Length: 96
Image (cartoon, rainbow, N blue to C red; front, side):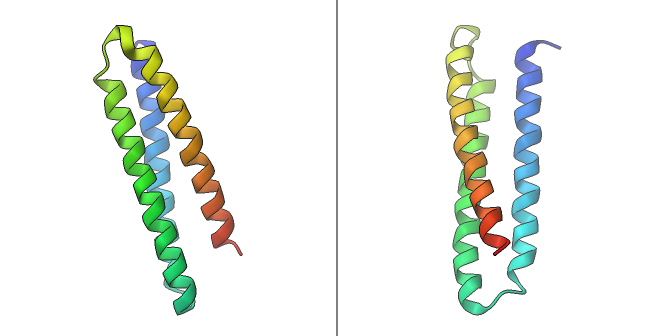
């Protein structure tokens, strides 16, 4: 297996973890007050958007030519940093 495929698999595994985290957060919303549910549902919607953004970047990476792979990989890593930060912030809000 080449480096490109291993990298894609690693990123896909991270996306799968994020999807599972969103599902976990959704389950936690039901026990919150109505006001908290509204806020947390908005947060979850934002995270779902981030996951979709990650999927799009991963698809872009998978379809990239060999010449473009490295530059697209840099964009994927930047997007991953933003998504990771968003998930860290969301988890911190849920633990309040």
